[in-house]
Amino acid sequence: MSLKQVVEALVFASQKPLMPREIVAALKGAAQDTEDTDAKDFAKVKEAQVAALLEELKVEYIEQQRAFQLVEQVNGWQFVTDPAYGRWVRQLYPEAKPARLSGPALETLAIIAYRQPITRADIEAVRGVAVDGMVNALLERGLIRIAGRAEVPGRPLLYETTQFFLEHFGLKALEEMPNSAELRRMNLPTAPVVEEKQLAEQMTLAETPAQADAEAPAENPESSAEPAAEPVPEEQTPAAE
Image (cartoon, rainbow, N blue to C red; front, side, top):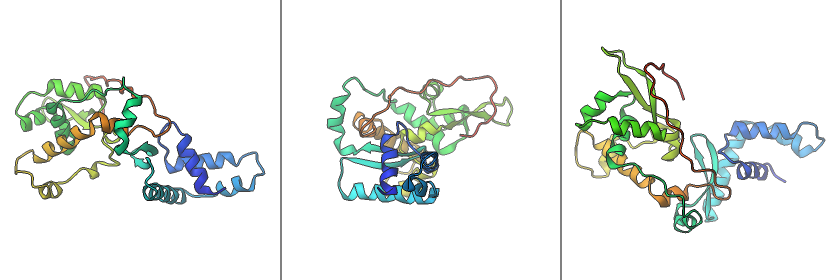
């Protein structure tokens, strides 16, 4: 038995993504009240060693061309099915048809993602239309949240993306979103909101049923229930994720 196999078993058995520190905690817990030498040795590993093993496993599955992958998300490591097999995986969940956001809602989300924290008035200044309905829909989906109030007359609410936004679109951090230089290399036309429109196109692809199904856990899929809508209070202090 190797440490890599134990790490693999932990990620496989978990119902949620696992961070290296959670794996280390499990290894230490398994070493309590036992004389097993392997368990005691595994309990001495550091988070960096676990992270390196996870990367090794990720590469191994890719090289073996397995039908599933080990991916690192913002909230940890998890097994997912390869998107190439989404057509077949989807047949197991005929009732699971994810509600897709409209184009205007995706563009609104892209503006918030790139310019956060941002007020509703500033979003409307970019889009040129009222965004009340789109902002409320994004709040209900848990993709954005209220980040506080702007220090300007009237103290309007500020909006920012949530951790669920990163999870939903497969990002580990906001820095992974394409920057202006990357978008220009895609030969996009010059426009004031070219970044937002391109991200909206990427989000539309991520919202397709095939992608949604392909990103389900490979062996033990979790519930696909959407997060509850966040309340819109009159006053709210900024909160970190």
